[in-house]
Length: 204
Length: 252
Image 1 (cartoon, rainbow over the protein chains, first blue to last red):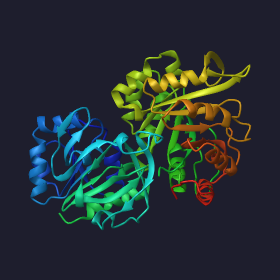
Image 2: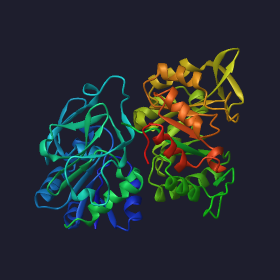
Image 3: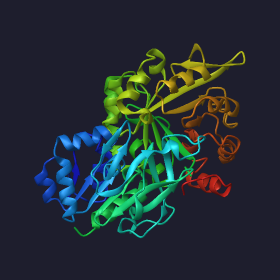
Image 4: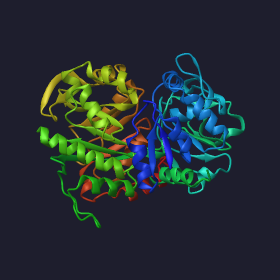
C-alpha cells in the first residue's frame, strides 16, 4: 500500500487515478499511523514552498516523514513535494525544508536566459545523470511534463536526472530510499506511469 | 528544451463530442473519453475540452466526462466554455482539469483572471481570445466570435497577462475554417507583447502549416486544431514525426 500525504496542498485526483491505472492501491492520509503502516510514501504538492512547509510543520507531519524516511521507507516527493525534501526553499523568504536531500530550492530566473519563459512549463526530455531504480522502465531522453518556476540546486550527488532549459535544471533526485521528481509523472503519459510503477515496485 | 505542443480540441455538448469522427478501433466516435484516450495514445501533448452546453444538466454531464477522462488520460487537460466565475474554476479543477480557459467570462468580468490567478496560480489560468481584423485593426470578439466588443486585441491580451493569465490561446476568426495556415501576423503581434506561452489556433489545414508556424515564429509554443484531427486528415503521430524531421523540438 502506498500512502499519499494529505496536508491540504493541491489536487490529488490525477495522482490517485494514475496509481489506479497501474493497479496500485493507494490511501490518501494525514494519519501518522497509516503512514507508518504503508509500504511507501508519496509527498505531493503545488503552490508556494513556505505555505506548504508550514502546513507540514503545523500538523507534525514533517517529523513523521523524516523519521520514516530515516528508517528506510521509500519516500517520493513530486513537484513542490520534491522541493520540500531539500534543506531550504528561497521563495518569498527563506524557509526550512525537510532536509532529507542536500541542497536548496531557488528561482530559476537568475540562471536561465531572459528570453526563456517562466514557468518552465511543458514537455521536456530527461537527461539521466545516474542510474536509479526510478528509471527501471523508461529511457534516457524520454519526455515528461514540467510546471515550475523554482528549481533545486547544490544537490551534490543526489541529482539523477536533469532537463535542459537554458541551464541544466534538476529534474529528479535520489538519496538512498528518498526520491524526488520536479516534473509531474501523473501528467506525463506512459512515461510518467512507468516512473510511478518503478516506485511502486521498489522493495520497502 | 521544451518541446512544441500539439493540442487537439474537442467540443463537447451534453456530454458528447459534437463532430463525430471515424477512427479505426474507435467504436463510439462521439464519446469524449474514448476520443481523448485515442489522441493521448497518438501523441497529443495536451487536450482541450470545450463545453458548448448551455443547460445546467449539460454542465453536469460535462464534469462527469471530465472526471472519467482524467481517470484514464494522463496528459494535461485544459477546460473551457462557460467559465464565468471562480466557482466555475473550482468545479472543473476538482474533476481533473489542469488548466482553465476563460474567454467571454473575462470580457464580462475583467477581475476574473486576477481572482483565479491569485487562488490557483497563473499557470492554471488560460486566456482564450477570438480575434478578427476590422478595418485593419485586431479586435476582440465575444460570444463565440459573433459579437465585436470593439476592444483592440493586442492590448487586451497584454492586460489579461498582466492580470495573471499564464497562457494565451489566440484564435484567428479570419483564418479559422479557411485551412490556409495559421494567422502568422496576428500571432507575431501577440508574441511581441507577452512573455507567457502562446497557443496558435485557427487555420491549420495540413501538416506543413504546423511546420511553417513553428519555423516562422519560434516563440509560439503550441498549435491547436480540431477538425483536421477529428476527420483524420492529419494524424498526430505523423505530424509529430514530420516536426521532429524538420528539426522542431518534439516529443515522440
